[in-house]
Image: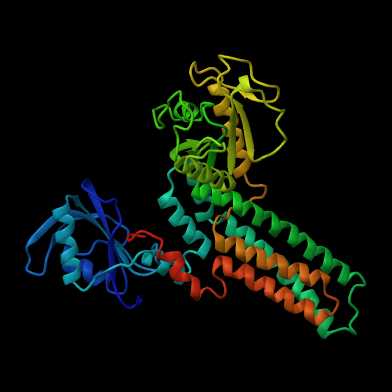
Length: 430
């Protein structure tokens, strides 16, 4: 990817529509726009122009916009073509753009250029990608907060505090004979521990943020013939799983994706847990146990006629007694009848509360990716070492390591090796 190239991409959705947007960015944007549209409109003023190819054949009648840098999304000269949305129109205009000297953009190249020109930091760029991919309300809110810079602002605040601590530490190293306050070392240690608390909270919240971004997995588990599949059908409000009175009907894990509390939730109907000599059913039980072990939340289901011990307190399980039309729920179990619908609304409310508990952040920083967790973990570990080390020089080194780790999050330092990973996940037009 060369910044000397002028690039273009379709910025609207795939398929036929009333209008399609083609974005242009790069040093020859003005020239390209002029070659297709003739007269270039005033900056940031829309105009209707006939678009022509190199042979002066009319391609379309379009709305065009000229956006000189640095006041554009990418920070460089840009233009937009709003053409009719037919595939033939978009293809013809794209061919004309190539003929005028543009090349098709790589995935994420527009946002990468915005990052390189200081229009976005790395977290804000990831927020753009997440917002484009958002399918639920919680995902939209989380991505928008990241894109608008709220998390970056908090990280900048931490970096400022850390910079002050490092300055105090350097003063202790370089000017030990100066008249520094007696409590300087204690102040440094207190500030370090305060930053550790804030950063570790954000790291824990990044796990919750990942659940919002990627979705939760809820495994429906229990003995055979307790109505697990019937409950899945009731929650999905359609027949997803086969229901039969014989035990062992479900042999493999069956998945359905629902939106609960604004979060995508994959509900997994698993095989009944029991000992069996049937090799096919035994494999289903093995897979069921594996899905339970990996799930974010387990919905443990029993038949109340078989009795059940009071459930243990846990954040990772929801205890449900199905078939309460035949017998009352044991103490501590949520009573439901998938047959009559009794208690299903209460089960949905309990699932919503559990999803919110697993996804709501304790702090204000919104992070959601593995690289976020790794960088925060590195920063917290370096700060803890700084708090524990005795030598002033070694403490300074650990503080600098923490500063480097925070800088990787926003792209301030050491990001060349992760830029491709971040921006290749974008769609072409971003």
